[in-house]
Amino acid sequence: MRWDLLSLPACPAPPIPGEPDAPIVRTPVPGPRTEALRAQHGAFQDARSVHVYQDAAKSLGNYLVDVDGNVLMDLYGHIACLPVGYNHPALLAAWRGGRFDWCAGYRASLGVAPPEEYVGVIERGFMGVAPRGLSRVVTVTTGAEAVENAIKLAFIRYARDQRGGPATADELAACMGNRQERANRMKVISFEGGFHGRSLGALSLTRSKPIHKLDFPAFAWPALPFPASRFPLEEHAEENAAREARSLSLVEETLRAGDVAALIIEPIQGEGGDRHASPAFFRALRALCAQHGASFIVDEVQTGGGGTGRYWAHEAWGLETPPDLVTFSKKMQLGGVYLNEDHMPAEPYRVFNTWLGDPLRAAQLEVINEIISKDALLESTAITGEFLVAGLRNLCSTYPNLLSQARGAGTFAAVDLPDGPTRDRLVRAMQQLGLETGGSGERSIRFRPALIFTPKHAAEALTRLEHALTRLG
Image (cartoon, rainbow, N blue to C red; front, side):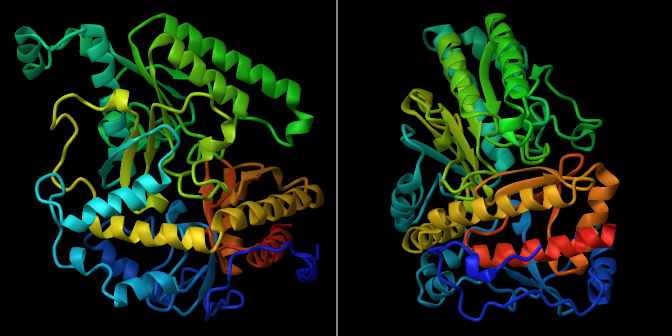
């Protein structure tokens, strides 16, 4: 299939000066220098998950340069963490111009003695992109911490409403002995296939792969079926509606049983295999939570920050009432939770840690948001995503024995292979052709490029993906 550059849609994202024109593969990937570093590194840390070791200074824009000199188009984005690619000139100019001097010399305990500049960074950088209806933010370091604190905020709010007043002396004594009768009954609903982090509380909500959970104690919280829309949507409308109706029925039944403090859900199940549901499904979940007094938590750790063509994926649902809590990390450079006023604890120190995030990364986010706005990167990502998913659908039609289920929102996209081993072979074949990517779920390949990824880059990626498919036969 020919991806004609003359027919590419217009896209507002400006080119990155000096960015490579295309991938260049000089050695097998991973190459000999990567493998030598892996052996050196592996003597001290587990390095088995490393794809390649980077030449960080030479990587630019959408292209990762590895230590063997290979120039790889990065479709993986460090698992959706790159908002504006590698070494964006505006970020480097901010560094060199001294914009981050106030937070480069030491790392502050932000809950104890934050720098003056941090107040403006929170107001402009975080609240400037806050989800509608959420007027408060808690910053932490990682996505797992974001989820941990979101469910803690939900528990605090639920217990407050159940108690109807301050905690009693008996309750304060019971909590110190892990004997809280009310708290120990509280539950959080999550969904089969969901991923919410690897810390112990978050692991009780994570349902994507056994390797994440094996041998770790967990709360006996309900895991309900996620509807996982079949694609193309127009061919599976009846089946998809039935799946959603069944899931909603089970959610309502679980909420009616009582003691449910919260429900947590991803807009798209990333680690679980890029599984989608309709906006109507999410609107119904929001209404059920409100009806039964459960906090509605939207986990946007992977989808937040623009990859779906909107800053927050849940903006596409048309919610009448916003979520109660929205978690973030990855493209946001640090972790955290947005919350409404009802979920703000009455007492200080209920949600707290030493660092409360990282002021340097928070300052970087302010610059990143300026780039996103100035270069219209959300609009660009929506346009590029339509082109990318249309191309994946064409490849599904051309290679029906290998590819199916092309889907996406913005460039947050995926396609399925017949099974896991075949998917892994295709990932390796793409790597040898200069495409850095990775798997999702049991048999999907995921696309998580930066927001500076344009139709021109997508056309190059689709051409090389088709070449990789021919290698698989």
